[in-house]
Image (cartoon, rainbow, N blue to C red; front, side, top):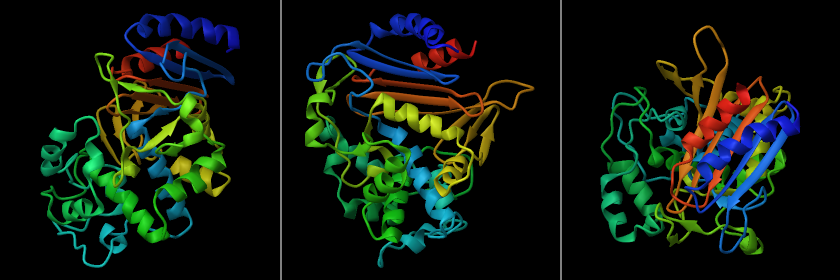
Length: 336
């Protein structure tokens, strides 16, 4: 697809949705062409573009999954290794059926809930920044006491589970989660603007968040569940990350990227992979759409790609209005 044809496909779809959002940026790739467009206006960053920094929420989980696969490829961990083996002394997870493994955590088959009920109760008084009130002791207490199903069953989406995976990998690596995810995943892929938390040098191009009614809200902090949602990024960086999903598997990082595509559970056309979710495009085709979305108090994100077709879609919004439909419509527009 030529750049002009790509833009002609993207603009009407983006404009149809843009009026719902305070500030919005979309990056679409198809056949080697790229289109990056912003709509709306952020009070600090101005009209958003491919370099505007936004929170990406749970899209972070795919980066954590990539780090897990990279460490597994290097023999630093094993996918079937019990999480218990990577936790500090004194933190003893109860066993129900069998121990929870690292693979269980990254595929949401640990049996752990989305969040512990007691955390949800505490968050009521901190709705603008609910994770900021949590400390490391809360994570260990949740690991030991949270009621759970037996692992290995149907996927049950769990922020707690992926957050715990981040701590397990950090304990094995001997360094906080953010160090290996940036040094071993983001920077080797050329993602210089993908990082957890805030960088003072990026203040002028970091979008402010807004709730679903367009009111400004604070950025979220993730002191202990960073692996589940702490990354910020740009549309250009995420487009490069999606393009990396088409790598040929020649390097350790490319092998790790491809390993995240493997399905471990399925229901009808939807598959649960390592971090990613995948949707088969239809009967009689082997094409799969890998996708994930994310949301924090003032941001929404959607990323999708079709490995083997060189198609990528990134949508980032600086408000809490859903962008999944926009992402899906952009994907349909460039694949029609």
